[in-house]
Length: 352
View 1 (cartoon, rainbow, N blue to C red):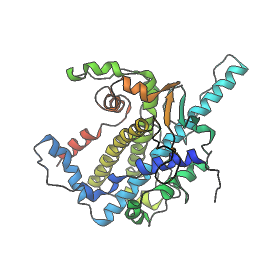
View 2: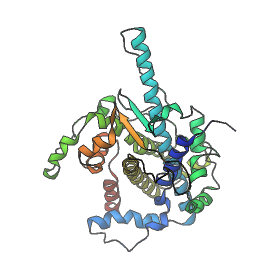
View 3: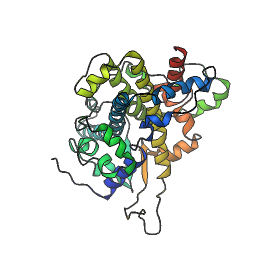
View 4: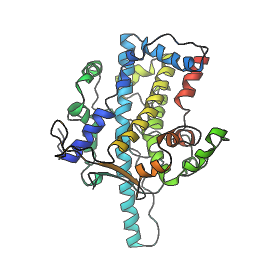
């Protein structure tokens, strides 16, 4: 087994992510059950997919849950890999600046590639840069996928049912492969304006388009939404069938494939919102008098900086989370290859 040195800050990050992001209450598909929606109403058409997801039989529920769990863990893996890539590129630029006046060639690593533009993304835990103690590969993979993973060490007891559902699947090699985006680099320019005309209610939102925040948003969209959806589409097209899980997912009929794509789309958008809430919550250290939680574990602040600017106060100046993620000026509309989850749900309902 691979050995790496953990520390209080790394354990704190793992505990926060395992209990607040990787916990995945949305994976309990049966919880989506509710009264039959009015298919004629807007909300009812959106809720139609939830009803169908809740009605899955046990075998399909197990398969959907395994696929969604793999995606959820890879979101965190992709996010941490993006910060490492940013740090690596910064070192390349600094080394090039010292040796010549010519800029360095871009670093291309297919395992961690994103379309974030040149810029510096840094993650601080208790004032210390994450790169100072985040393990290199394969240590990072061990934190997310191995027998000592954050999920196994820190997940709350209610995940016991989920772990039972995943028992038939080997989760040790769950890293999603790199699949190139369909869009070219011009699609990922930070600060770009929306492609479509803005409704009157969103006219003031155009002032919230911010190049620095977009550098962070591009990483979030790629890691949390687009990369997982490209992987699912490749599976459904018969590619990247590297394990029994992928083979079973590829065997789903078209209707079930569309349901899974919808659930992965909505979970990705929800997890972006959840992660930003985590940053806001932990921007000011949540401490009691002695700086530990109820279990005696140390507490630290969490902050992410894009080009030296802390994204939480910068986001507050831009009226909070909603305009950053959703709406015609949000990250989803401007930088995702895929429609938002509401549009996907409406398309599904209208096809019935």
